[in-house]
Image (cartoon, rainbow, N blue to C red; front, side, top):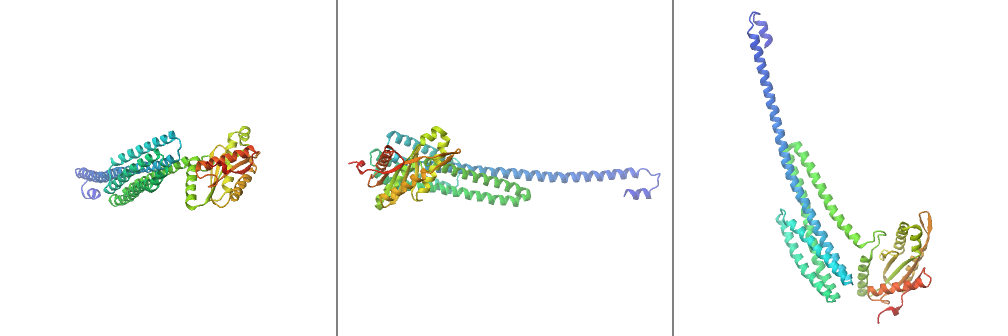
Length: 412
């Protein structure tokens, strides 16, 4: 347009070129304005999209945090419920009244943790199915409360057999039903996680690529955190249970678990009319290793002895550590004293083999006392006492040997 004006108008006419420039500048202004409006609309669209993303991100974050909090609270309830089962069972093994009172106090503290976690869960936004599960759990917990009080009353009156029957037939099934209800709550939270995934798919349709990326990122973050929280709750519960029942140095069952296993084994032997052997193993010359090479060397020796003991018995047998260099081995379903003696001698020979510790050859022995059920005792205390007495007779006779308990140690 500007070129056509310059070729058709006389040079003397000087007004049109300025008007053409004004028109051109006006068109440029409109182009700039239009482009600016277009950029503004794009910016507005981006801002609205980002705002929508932020709003949806906050909503998704709230859902994830709610789910994580539920996971934590249900996990605390589950852990406290399992701990109460263990404490109630340990009360049967506690002969000292002060120890039993301490266990009752721990039982009460676990109950408080359970109730506090449940109250916090009820204070959150819950669906109808979650409320129904919690109502079922409440009814079961109330039943468990009344039943465990009956068990404690029976224990206080010395009616241990009746208390054990009530524990096995009614109390434990009720508490396991409580734990099963909490597991269902876990399943609901997992379904919530899948619902979050479906929600993120809807965000993909609404916000295109950008919204999809943000939604997937939040979903992945939420599911990852939920998984690790759930895994951590289970790991802490398993670790707590392991630490309470196994020796941290050797990995063998500790005194608490050994007492429980021996009691269960005696009950099975009574029902099935079979025999079992209980061995009390004490290492010879172990103190000399500790005194000369140090406690770290002594710990290495105990770990190796524990490994050899496990290899010397059947998979169905039990080897445990009581304390220090004292071990217990239990053989179930044996036919004769000779069979128990053969295993004890096998353990003694395995322990005798030299151990290389800190570049030095270390040799220890084992004094082993053997008590048979029902020959040398019909209770856990009698078997342990008679096996211990037999072991001390081995020590008195020169150590490094095996000896069978005497029937005369049985009470009249």
